[in-house]
Length: 161
Image 1 (cartoon, rainbow, N blue to C red):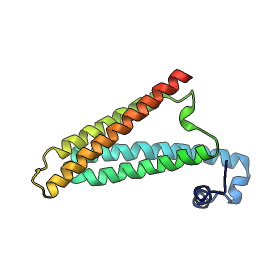
Image 2: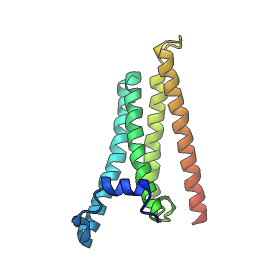
Image 3: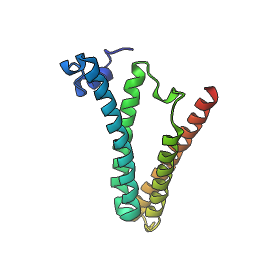
């Protein structure tokens, strides 16, 4: 638990963790709960918006949808990394709710299928269409790999518990 690393100092500065607000335990607990609710909402709304965009607007929305998913993913990575650096492994919890994980993964699959569909109409003539098609294909492969990795990790954690 090294709070002197660059990551931890930056996180403390961004989160304003030195504020007197955090001195009172109830305020800190309520804020932590509110932050968890807001974080979960951000995860869901980001993926829902990206999924709707690729299915509704098609190929033109792919870069924006991927940017939205990327930003959401970055926020998740920072959150999990911060907790991990303080000794809390959020994905090792035996109470991890499959009732929450499975619908999110299903939405991720719908998003990936939307990327495939959105990438399909591009011409593969070496121009921008080809680049967009390759971009969509690469995103699909990358997201599928992440989904498989997460699923395998969840199964392994369940077996250990």
